[in-house]
Length: 111
Length: 118
Image (tube, rainbow over all chains, first blue to last red; front, side, top):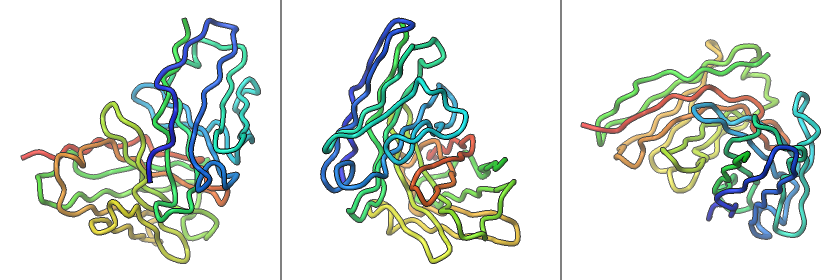
């Protein structure tokens, strides 16, 4: 089972919107609505930002939104802020014996 | 508030067994409502799912299955990871995490760095 494909890096200026893609297959992202997104600051544990494709846990700002189309899921950060600079990972359930697969990770830089 | 805390040796010799424990507070691992998982992250690399324990059994990443055992001590509210025959490739930050039925990791430990070296 290969990792889900994410762009290595995405950047934007404060206040702008950016979108991170997460591409899988029909066996994972495309086949199930169990896609989640995690934010990881340097030296910290990942933090859940989105679950079940587009649901935000309590406490996550509404400028974080997500969706899915076919085999690609997307995370959008609107009104980019300095504290959003971090690594972001997607994850999905997969019907393969691996059960869970993570994305390759995207480094978000706030210019 | 659920909290998870990993503990165990930070240095393991090649060919030996890596053993880590995750202590859970603020919630019971015997409730049967969650999966209790181990995930690792090599330096500068992405996340890798190791396996999980739940009320009906356990699941493991096939790439590690022959070397991994996840067990639980309900009386201590802890679950543990054993990874045998380690090599330098097993050097990583190891996290324990709670996985909900929606298959997302909603609570994580702070992680513990394990180095495999002689």
